[in-house]
Every structure is written in structure tokens, then in C-alpha cells.
Image (cartoon, rainbow, N blue to C red; front, side):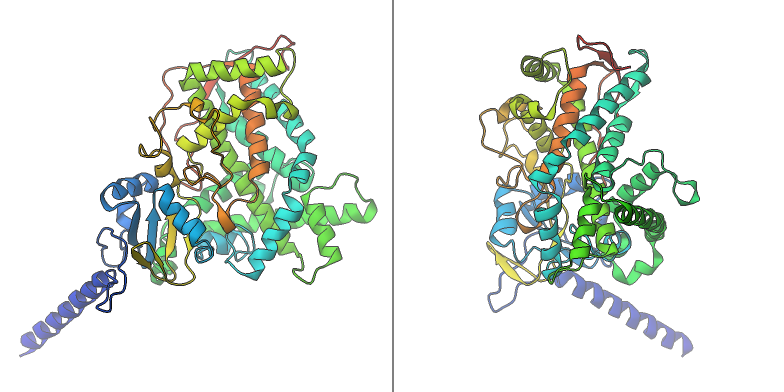
Length: 508
């Protein structure tokens, strides 16, 4: 009798478990007898993990392959999170323009919680009045074209220093130079001088950690996939220890940011500086006060975090890919160099005022952004309510990913999509400002990147200076292997031999 009771109990639990699986799977088929539109097509999810197992190490590629089977609008369950992935310009326009307001929210993430002060920044804050005021602060005060122009001398100075550093490390072209290291350093210095008035390349933080190491850790952790973000009931397990690492690096950053703000306050108390950096601007706003938003230390820290992430990581990735493609395509490299020599000459370095006339260089950057989208899935959006998109129903709280990597390589959109051809943009009206849905490198609509002008200014200048000052030789073939994270950098950094090519003396 005891054996029978045990068997009945086991059978009961088995039936309950099978019923739960059935309910979980059929829940994804949101089509009612009342004529309600159904969900977009997509792969059948597994219990608990949903479709997470399909993403692999390169989610943008996995999702692009799935789109060839299920179409340009696809529904998945990532853990317990309903998710839509779109991978065509038409579908991107539907979600990011026609239904922009509904999908203007950001989903909560561990990175937002632990590294941007409970999402007090602009990039990850939820849609609402707070976000509107913070974005207004950035677009009207911090990241305007006028303020970007005011930092021109900083960019020119730091890029010239980078050229000297590359030449000195190469010992007159004898040694290989790790280009990624120099690109990362110059962009980090530019961004730091913009928000803090000085660079921190050799600054020691608490525990002896170097500033650049802290920034690299922030960028890495912002881009990791945290399982608990998709399976909240298991978040306490902290698989991979990512949340613990986020809290640890945020503690180091917080001490650095407090020290930075205190230095500014003390300096302003003694003597007002003629040249104001972005922390000064925000402290001015904190002193003046506003009925709309009272700027606090937490706001300043969150904005600095955004600037470090967006201003350094995205631009580093773009520049390294641009140099990779130019080195892989000698004709494009020669044409870009000839244009600069024609407009600038060989007796001086490039100035920012020269960039407006370097049309082919701009085509090189556009083509790089098309082929190597720095944020392959953009930042996730989230629906605030249910809505109908075409013939499908999208539930509230659905996460949205736009696979701009797939769009940039779609043969229905681009001729020879895997070929690097900057010439395709000559005479073309397509830009990267969010007006053309076949090239959404910086997003569009309400949640488009507010720092696009500032970021591109550095990208153009660094690329122009590297190919104008040096001839480059590489050993072997340059690969196109990627690694997925916050951005989509090369798996292996470029190492090359630089040879000084201007008629002036070398910078050393």
C-alpha cells in the first residue's frame, strides 16, 4: 500500500509538471477565439529558459539566422521575458517610428541597477518625466553642437599625442603596435577631459586599481548577458558572479566620482575657471536649481557613466573596424589617403576644420557602421502597453531588439552586403542620424543616441590622423572575427607596423 501511495504521488507530480509545460508553451500562442491577432512567428520555447539557449555566443548572428526561417518580425521568450526581434528596415520603422511612444521604455537590467545608480542616467532610465528632463539636460546643455565644438582643441591635442605615442612605441616602424590600446587610450583621455578637465590614464584608484582598468571592467559588465535579468526567480543565484562584480566596480567608480566632484567644488570655491568642463556645467545647474529637475551628485555620476560607456567603447570599436577594413582593402585606403593629401597636404596633420571636406572619409565611416554596427541589437526597448503591429499583436512589457547588424548585411537592402565598399555612399542621402532605417547605427526616435555628433567628431579625426600620418603594414591576413558584448569589437586587436609618411619630421 505504501508503494502504491508513492506511485500515485509521483504520477500526480508528473502530471502537474507536464500540465505546467503545456501551459507555458501554449501561453506563447496568443490567438483567441474572439479574433484577436496572434503573436509573430518564432521558435517554440523550452520550460524556464525559454529560447535563451538559442542565442549562443554571438546572439546577433543567431537571431539573424532564425529570421531567415521566421521572418523579419519574430517572437521569442528569453527566460520569462516576451521578446520581439525585428530585422528589416520596414519593421524597424513600424516599431521605432510608427509606434515609437509605445516602445520608448527601457527594461530594468542589473547593469542599470548596479552601475547607473538605479537607472538615473539617460540611456537606461525608464520612459517618463524623469527621463524627459534628463535627456533635455543632455541635448540642451551638455551635448549640443556648440559645446562639442568648444572641445575641438581637446580632441586635436589628444589625437596628436596619440600619433606621437604610436610612433614612439613602434621605434621607427620596427615594432608591432597594438592599435586598439592606443585608440582606447586617446578616446578615454578625450572623454575625461571633456567631463573632468583632465585625463586619468595613470590615475590610481582604491585598491591600487588603475583608472583604465576600472573603465574596461565597467564596459565589459555593461554588455554581459545576466541570466537573472531574464529569469528573475533565479536572480539570487547570480550565475557568473556578474552582479557581485558590478557592485564592486561601482564602489570603486563611486569613490572616484566623489573625489572628482569634490575637486571641482573646491576649485570653484577658490577661483572660477575660464574653461568649463561638463561637471562644471552640471554644478552650475545644481546651484541655479530648477523646478523641473534638481541636479544632484547622483545625476552627475550617472551622466559620467553614460559618457564613459558611449563615448569610449562605441567609438573604439568603430575606429578599430574602420582601420581593419581599410587595411583589408588597399584601394579604399589609398583613395582615403589621397583625398586627405589633396585637401590637407603632406606637410601637416589633419585639423577638425578639414573634416567637412573629406567626403570619402565620411563614406568610409558610414560603410564601417553598416558592416560592423557597434551596437548590433541596439539597446533593448520595452512596450508600455499592448498594440497591433501589422498583422500581429505585441503584448505589454514585451522586450524589443532591432537587429541592425542583420539589416546592414541584408542582400535585399544592400548590393554585395558583405563587401566593404565606401563608394556606395558617394552621392547618397543616407546618413546615420536616425532618418534612414537601413542604417540605424545610433538608434532613432525618442531613445536615439543624444551624443552622436560628439562621438562622430572623434571617430572622423582619429581615423583621418592614423591614415594620414602613417603607412601601415600587417603580417598575415586580418580576420573579421567578432566578440559580443556592449558593442561588437574585433575578437583579436589589430597589430601593425606604422611608417611615418608626412614630409615633416616624425613626431618623436
